Length: 343
Ligand SMILES: [Zn+2]
Ligand SMILES: [Zn+2]
Image (cartoon, rainbow, N blue to C red; front, side, top):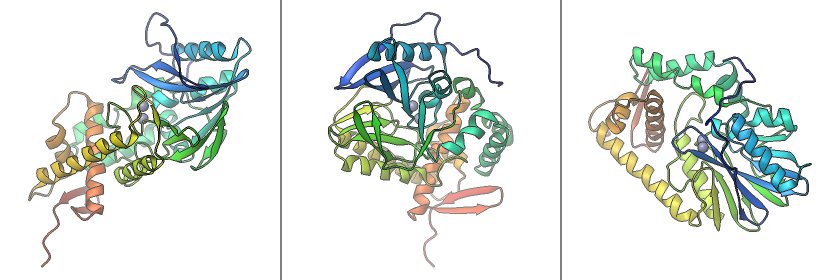
């Protein structure tokens, strides 16, 4: 899609701006998204007539208007947005970045592993579509379905206007947001350069999509993922729990307190999924596509089907690294089976 100034609108009418103070000097702005979560939570940190922000919602006129109004309410008519830290480049968290840098000149902070994903995903996507196509084929997706599935993300581009980062993060940086100084916690898995932000003083964790109150974040292996995203994700959870957060402010859903309890639910979910996969494989040798269909069934929605495959592959990879499965690889095909008993 050519970059145009016509922005997608999520609704016809302008809803009330959903801005609430969640803790001293931190405001949550809920922005609408057209997916199952319905809203993404962004966080605003006012300081005089400047406002800093974590995540910015998708690219839409409605989001932009809500952000502008929130900034004005918090910082007065001369209020300006100064700094934007994006947890990861999914459309609901990053999509509006281009609008904000263009119209406000904000500083954009992004983890460096997210940066190289932007161009192939949102600007010139043909090469990535081909790479996804061969990835699907290698993992057993029949050709006709692979043709459809490899194109399943094209539509997301309309929700994103990319912007180059002003600062690339590695993790562990202290960044000033409003009157708070937060530490960048790199938590790869859901996306290679996903970051959370932690306030060591008040032990508040801004969790992005890493730790959600109601959903399991999608952890998928695909051409842009880290090679072993599930173990990366679980290791990140462990690091976050060790911080002993007292309050978690997630990217979707309501704030919650029991980070350790919620992380334990995630760990258990993935543990059970691995058991289920082991059972499905039994004494057979299967490709990722067959495993995904056995676990999740066939879905109407192409995007869901691709996510299921990628999620299955993330588990299979983790299991084969742990020696629970053997991964057999040859040009054009990868399959998995239980380890053959030692001769
Ligand atoms: Zn995400
Ligand atoms: Zn999200």
